[in-house]
Length: 154
Image: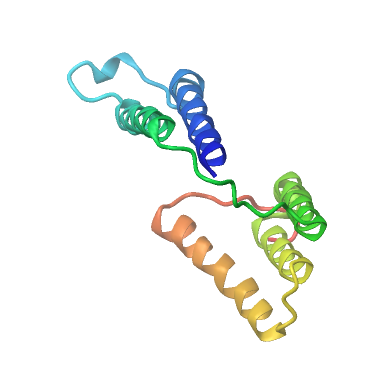
């Protein structure tokens, strides 16, 4: 258990460093008009720096703790197939979202994932397929005034 958590914390540290060095500068542009004001990169950099510092503290604290028994159950073949299938379905959704649009792609991915992971309650599948995309649509399109990908159907 200790090494698993410690590995996750090290991965979190690595992601924080990558975000600070590459992602934030590449995605958030600054200009010289921000000479007296805060840069748009300030808060993302602040959050990633805090995350990095906390990760380092947690790794250091975990490395000093006595080692416990490793009582983690091994991953079963079924769980491995479920994780792999989920990654494939989400990859297809990401690949197809620009071509077929947000609504069709999200609804198809939700139905596919719910059926693939064992849900057979059609009322729950229908409600989740309708309510979740509508909620996200109103949140992003109407509330935040951001456009979702539009495809050939919607």
